[in-house]
Length: 459
View 1: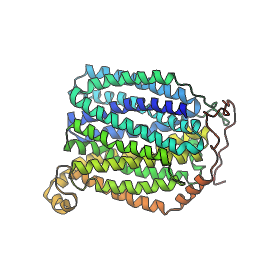
View 2: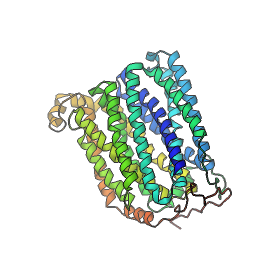
View 3: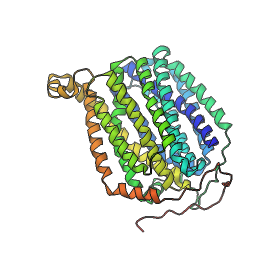
View 4: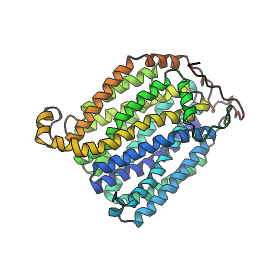
């Protein structure tokens, strides 16, 4: 566990740095443009390319050692942020934010690449839980991961808001480069006793969606879990595109950043609870029950234009998210063979995140040109004012409410479905990674060992 804890702390520093820069860029872009179209482009682009790169990144993790993959990701992020900093100081802000010119797209692409490659570290960390933590402690370890993510989210939310509000985007970019270099130096000092890279079927292709799909399908019920999370992310894209504009219409950017930081304590508390209590005997059931609670909170959050209601709703929602994410990670870590986890984690991330850009990119124009004008009109206020109240953000509130109600209905149906029962049984009976933990002296590097064959349930 000691090695895992050091890797976790290092991941915290890298995550804070990367998300601090991306949060800051999103805040700055909206404040300079006052357009939800810009924020939907930023959020949609991030999710789209994260989905497209998840399988290649996951395959990379299975091809090379985990520490090497994390070092590579950190170096690429440092280079991208350094180039982005140089562009920011050379090109005027009004030119950078002009969507009709190429400078905005170049600047966006560079920062996007820096943020995207950090996802390699997240995928590698998920496999490190399997590799470095005994089986009976993995649910609690995933709770620690959630707690650390919450700490990072809280810190970068506050820092991004304050930095953009008081200092501007330039100093934030410079700080990002400095901290990511520190992260690389710390990671280099960590010794990880990894099992050898195993390829019984030959070295995996650099991009092999078909093989990753076959590995996922080979686990009974797992594909249904991936599809359920995919639909959730389709609805979640609405919040990704519109939550920052919603908050920034209610308060200054400094206050919005602080509010996010305070609400992120929910992540931390959720992770602390999981690290002490675990996730119960059936994390699949935990996942679905938590989703019912999350969509209920999300439906109540926008019914009035209230900072207090927004803050309480976000706090509770973030605490519940930790349980949902830890449950899914725990299921995957138990039912998927370790030597395949990079590809399966990458495939799951690719499919799940592929849906979010669709709704994120669609909801921006829909909100800006239809929902917001409708709710600002006399007809909208007369028809839905009793439900959503009055205010300038009622069009965004309508989008939030519709997405939440759909999510709640789908989750209740999933809890009554056959795939839920199948995956629950698969989790209960699986022993595939029970003895794997690299911190155990009995586990030695095993270069050349065979990878367990993948069986097709249809055979």
